[in-house]
Image (cartoon, rainbow, N blue to C red; front, side, top):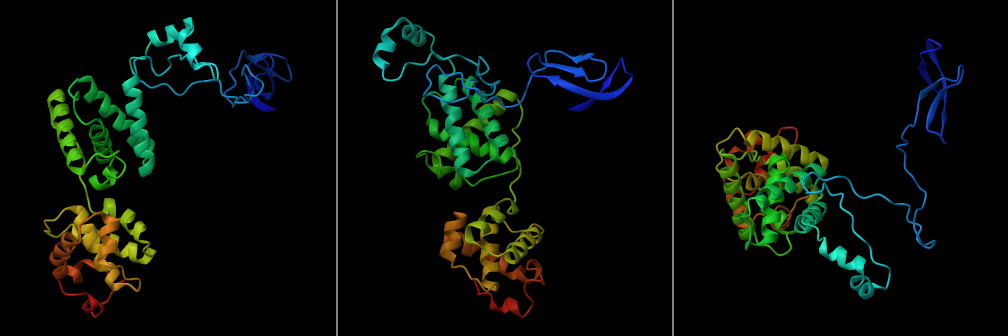
Amino acid sequence: MADAFCPDCKRSTEVVFDHSAGDTVCSECGLVLEAHSIDVTSEWRTFANESADNDPVRVGGPTNPLLTDGGLSTVISKPNGAQAEFFSSSLGRWQSRGANPDRNLILAFKTIATMADRLGLVATIKDRANEIYKKIEDLKSIRGRNQDAILAACLYIACRQEDRPRTVKEICSVANGATKKEIGRAKEFIVKQLEVEMGQSMEMGTIHAGDFLRRFCSHLGMTNQAVKAAQEAVQKSEELDIRRSPISIAAAIIYMITQLSDDKKPLKDISLATGVAEGTIRNSYKDLYPYSSRIIPTSFAKEEDLKNLCSP
């Protein structure tokens, strides 16, 4: 029993919940404080037609405002093992006539969800990617274009806008065969189309080397001390005029930190973990090397330790 305020008793009293009627009743005066309450807890009763089917689920998925019917349309299921007979029946004919107008959208959303799950992205990024695709699909301008590249580009833009950027190579790894060049072109196309539609520039968010650093360090299995030193080095590198991409700077700093640690990582492994070519890492390292004493925290490496860094 719980307590609630009773207007007749003029004070808080214990209440009893009548599950059969859905009423909340005062235990002292019998006043019904709330009638026909809705039980929002899970329901484990089975409503299946066949006793062998013990699935308690009898509701659909959540509403989706991006779909015409909110995602609450009804589909007539076919009996097990009776597919041919079902489609020849009157129910089957009505089901085929009432084809879902959002079928392509639903398939696209499922593809985006699969890619996002494989990358370990949160639901907000997934929803943002769905919104971007819905906008570009409503413009009727993607017909004839590589669908996989379009969907991957929507996910890439969503990651940027939610301040959880992923590299194009990471997106490409889950993009069902779409190449980096195709995804890049699709991204430019989507941004251009939406900017024309909105009449203003599209906010994409700024990429920083620190956005990728922890993930790259995790792939390499670096120690917490080395990760912390790399993060401090990345923050200090932003004060320098290093004209390299944030991903290249992150890879070069990781290379620099691992040289100074006991667990040294070969350049090949860093290239595989970051998706940056070995030559690009070397060039970025060459630009950062003169500032090593400024960016490497003294708590991680002393001045004499920096002499162990290989000369670019």
